[in-house]
Length: 129
Image 1 (cartoon, rainbow, N blue to C red):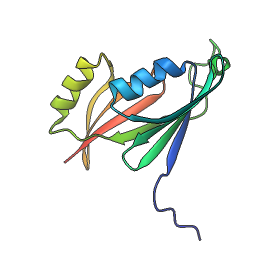
Image 2 (image 1 turned 90 degrees about the vertical axis):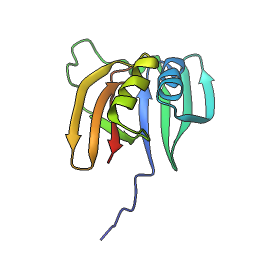
Image 3 (image 1 turned 135 degrees about the vertical axis):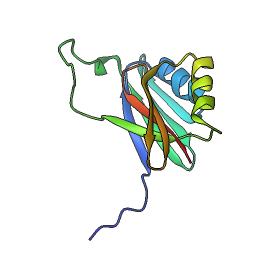
């Protein structure tokens, strides 16, 4: 039987690499490890999330159809954030110009808040107790 030890990385399809890098790096503080531009609008990037990675793949053709209210695929992913409190996290998000999509929710291990990236992917941010 397989016994997974950890999540190694997450891969996201985005429509605009620059806009997504501003959100994830400038807004959420992830570190850009490398980027490869293949053609206009088509690129890939690897971001550091602690000891794990997040891969971004951009292509303008990834845009959802106007009729896709809830397309299949990734629902959300969660990043553990190092903050003294949820209020400090909310203040940091406000300073970065990142809107809160869902107000803070108490979890068994801390408090979470949801934001949305530029393509609408839900990102849960948790401050653990």
